[in-house]
Image (cartoon, rainbow, N blue to C red; front, side):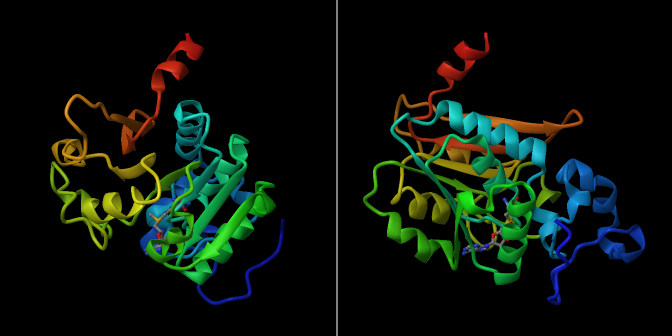
Length: 241
Ligand SMILES: C[S@@+](CC[C@H](N)C(=O)[O-])C[C@H]1O[C@@H](n2cnc3c(N)ncnc32)[C@H](O)[C@@H]1O
């Protein structure tokens, strides 16, 4: 896959000298983010801040696969970015259909190209637009899981010990939960590792449990996922033992 991007803002950085100075730390992490980086991954500058590293995306895809209701056959990645999660979900082979929504056209081009590198471009249905509008077309379907890795509000999100999800920009927890659970009660949110769990717990009914999993790389939590709805992690644990 040596196709070169021919549009300003879409980059295939193959050498450290080409790489923007303010992003330098990501150059050293590029193979932790994309195992196939050298095969010609395309990125926008902003996407380095939000892309889910491949080992984490694969782990999340495995967890969703093993715990989602068997009747669920469709998964929607509401904020597809450059494809980190959508590619992992498609590679899991668990879904009849994987939909990837992204509002930024250049970022979407990167995602499609990156999916081609991983051999799953044609397994994903690509929808360019605002997820809060686009997702409405899935209303009423019973077989859908929504995965969402929203923006967390820029690079300063981690400054507080506990992250206030009511202040997450541009979409807070309430907006995400309210909109996406109209489509499916099975909702997986990928959130900052310091997210306020009390705020999350308010969305459960009495006696109900929520699964929250931290995803770590090199011994440090990078993020957490909250699994709302009927995910059954007991099955996965039984299978693992
Ligand atoms: C944190 S990134 C997602 C990263 C993605 N999981 C990956 O691994 O590449 C969030 C993405 O959501 C997109 N976005 C923001 N608001 C959106 C909206 N309303 N509808 C669709 N996409 C949106 C941004 O352009 C950005 O690419």
